[in-house]
Amino acid sequence: MGRSLEFYRKLGLDIPADGDTQPHVEAELAPGMRLLWDTTESVRSFTPGYEQPGVSQISLAVDCAEPSAVDGLYKDLVDAGYHGEREPWDAFWGQRYATVQDPDGNDVDLFAVLPADDG
Picture 1 (cartoon, rainbow, N blue to C red):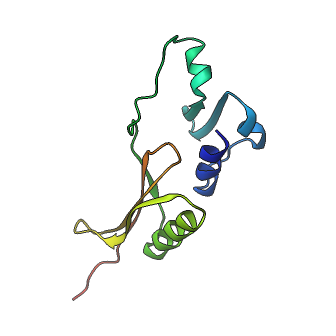
Picture 2: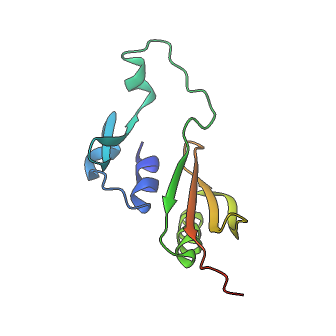
């Protein structure tokens, strides 16, 4: 739990400090929208026999506001020991883009709009 929560704190989520030792943690993303974490044991308390599927079950993307911020956040996360799935690159759809994985193997895309090419 702690490693996953630390990853999302690095992305800027306000996650309670005591969450690392809790079986259930929530972070508000916007009014009425929350991201939740549960330990496997917590889920098994209401779904006996639950097994983690072992594959990414969600898709998240983080707007980094400017292209250089994609590179900086990607480097910070990889330097902190998280898996860099795809290094930053200029995508054909006009964004600086990169993908890292959270500790549970979920892809998290980092992106920012590239400046218009006035050429």
